[in-house]
Length: 464
Image (cartoon, rainbow, N blue to C red):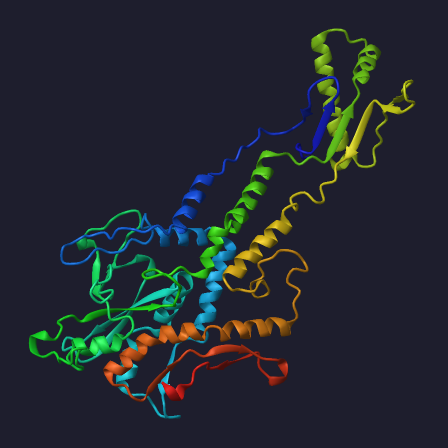
């Protein structure tokens, strides 16, 4: 027996809810959401933070230096955005990073095999794809051997933990990267990894100048003690954005400014609050004030306390009549009379079945609209990810979905070009003339080709 489904309206007293448990009040802390959105949208100019006289200060990422962490939290709290980021990282990854000889059928050298044996290309490349889709830039660190002759390691550095040194006023170059945990704190120098940054526009040229392989802009070749003792360097791989000198602002972050993100987050809060703070009513029972007078007269009840007890008993009898399988097909008899004023029939007790078929679905269209805007911001068609609820929301033919996926994969080429640059720096410095790199994309096929998918390249391998 459910005790939450009868609502009795007694015209002679206040509204009574039989069996209703104490209301559970759910309070939603919107202040935390507002704080995260403010941090994510923070574009105020900041003063570089100096941590040691040996370096120029690093540029905070947002005035509170927490902007990337706020964005991560906002994405993690939203099922559509978090899935969008995963989907974008996976489509960017394609079939993964591949390397092979330029000459068809020829084995690559043992040196190249050894390099990738100890550098986990799937892990490195997927990390890079994820950061590119979240922050529109990645950081690659290359590590040379003791002699400075070969690059032997390539490592990914999480973008959210990276801060750029303010640029050299003489040449406009970012010369150092500070890597550490900046979330809600200002780390000291001993808590940070400080890594020299190669020239953004000519990283391989900068590297070769540092090691005396190439003359500098003045035509001078480094020799002896002039050759760098550093063995670790950072490469910044940034997708171009307008007006951002240090940290890019991805187009997808517009969702935090437009109001759609906050609006979409409030929808489930509203639904949860409604479910927790309200009672689902199945029957509405209306009792006329004259019913009690006639009942008390009929049963000769005059004592006030006895009247209250009789009312409670009647309420319980109504409940037992309306609930429970054993009461099915029973009949309830109630009197009525005709009003002399207007001739209308007045019921002593009226029982109405409440229609709850649409309960909880009043914000479905709003939710679908918000989800569509989030997918649009992330350049993910809702037909590919199934963001909108409803039976017909995702009714796209297989051909349409296949073409949408093909278009999505084709648009990953600029990202591949940027993400492969560090590997071509390794290739040039290590003099691997024969090796080429690629990121094949997955192309969905039709059944007449005898397979579900195939791999294709977006690159002209003859020019690498």
